[in-house]
Image (tube, rainbow, N blue to C red; front, side, top):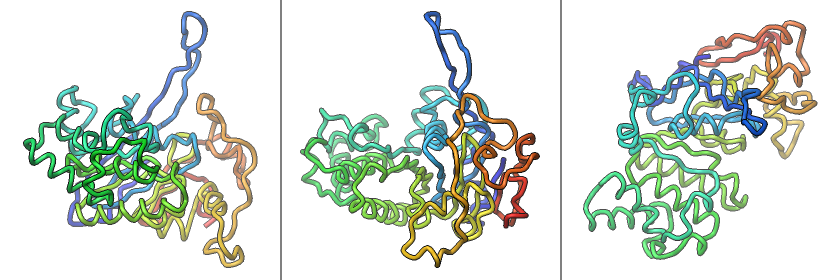
Length: 337
């Protein structure tokens, strides 16, 4: 599956390229821990992220989107496929070379409390990447930490606080400041607002957008909140059971969805007046998501798809362009358009 359209024509080389990425986990049982199966968490995912854009990866829990995020940074080792950052194949890097490259690729984690060391003060947490990568001298590092804390809306005085003394939104701001400390080009944000109060979520989204404009960042945004994705992303890819089912510009995916799963996701978003939806409501989904340890044959969505035919049950749909820059993996995409 390939998504080649890029918004920045002036930069023909994308910042991030993912090709046929697969991440499989063994299923072990018994006292001897014998392998009895495989969980196909990610199973052949390809996309590109252009410089300066925000690329959203969405899907239900268990679709594999967070595993993609971790594999991009090699926090999970890919089973197959390639990840290129700024033209360099990350799979061929040794431990030291990967550590140096990670200076330019940082992550904002989903849980801002679990991702912060509770025994370290905020200033030390934000300064840690500078110490690890040997960036700047002592006084320069302190000034960098103070500047970052001001940028994320905490203020320099918060450097002396511990994570437990902060609210959830403040802790996430610390996580964002830490991610920006080494001046990365790419920030992978894994559900950055899902654990926060609704009243705080919009503030964090707006902060991420402001920082992107100020610092020239590129985002890979992992989310299941479609309202956030529609607001923040330039392009969107939809995952289901380890594979991409649709991808394109924000306006194409939200305004002209071609895959039944995408339609179902959009129909699940509450709107003030259901009769004035931008797209017709899709039939509700039935059944549960199949196990990634035993994905169904043919189209993986056919067990829940209200439009499935015999071909869907037997034949895996190929990835193809439904329109310029708008890809879909569905046998009936043209009929349902």
